Image (cartoon, rainbow, N blue to C red; front, side):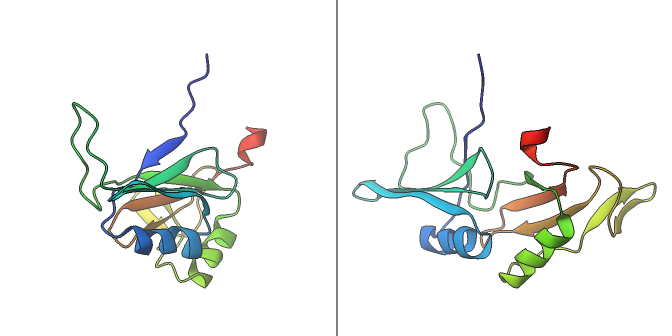
Amino acid sequence: MEWTLEVIPVPVTDLDRAKEFYAERCGFTVDVDTQISEGVRIIQLTPPGSRCSIALMQGMPPIPGRTAMAPGALQGLQLCVVDIEAAHAELVRRGVDVSPVQHLGADGWAEGRGGVWNSFMLFQDPDGNGWTVQEAPSPLSER
């Protein structure tokens, strides 16, 4: 049996602003933008090449037994790319406020590329949800 991670809800305050950020600035594909009923809207977007999407939702009641996340509360979402410098340049070109490329060294975090799996950059959406981009040695289809 396969257990595939396919959709991650991202809590935001303004769906249209978040949709513009993820689609226009980050380059995610808008898969779905639908209003289920009065006041209930879902936007699903997928990063280029990803098998997992994000969902921006408005008016959805919390799942029974769960609490709703506050906008900006989601931290540590991680994307992988095979060329972090090209990805950094693309995000900057699209107007995303992204950190410099950095790596974890013996004395903590330092600017610049690291070794295999050790080059990162960080950005946040307009609500403060935090993303990490990590350089991978090869495309997902080859790992």
